[in-house]
Image (cartoon, rainbow, N blue to C red; front, side):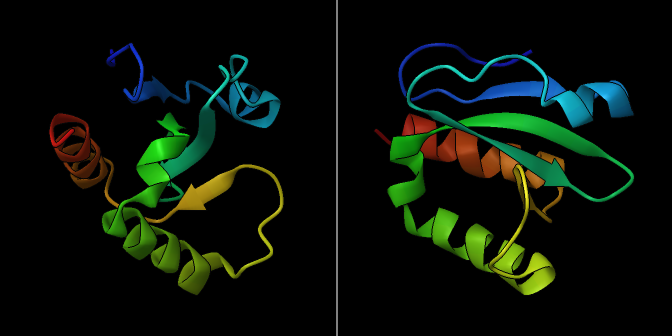
Length: 96
């Protein structure tokens, strides 16, 4: 369902609320889990820490701060269309 390898992004669909509450699978070293989407459709995405350096991620993080504030509890949530987010991340992965 996603890419694997160094610097790649891994996508995981949240199947149910129990999986979301538990946080899903363990997070590999060098990755940060985020929830992307709206309240109705969210996906858990593992982002390599190096990708947070890109200016596109600064914009996405600003969107999250505007929506949820700077003191989010638990997993970071980004209020962005899932398909658009995938396009941005795929573009960043290919730009290396």
